[in-house]
Image 1 (cartoon, rainbow, N blue to C red):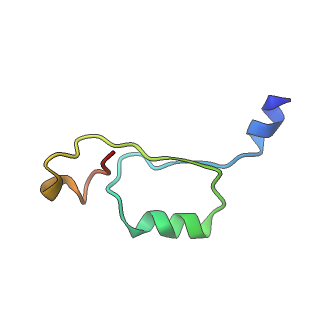
Image 2: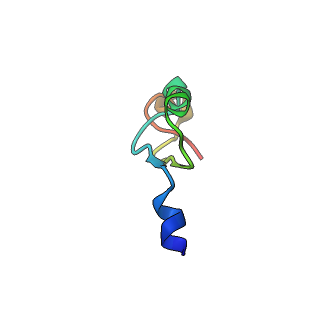
Length: 55
C-alpha cells in the first residue's frame, strides 16, 4: 500500500533559511529521503544571499 511506503520516508523541511554549509551538515547527520527547501525574497542577491535561498 502507498501509505506504508510513505510512512517509511524521512522528509526534511528547511523552512526560511539562507543556503549554506548547514544543509551539508544536516545531510551528513540524518538520512533524508526528500528535502523541501523554500525560497522567498531573494533579490537583490548581494543583500539577501545570507538570509534566503534562491531558486
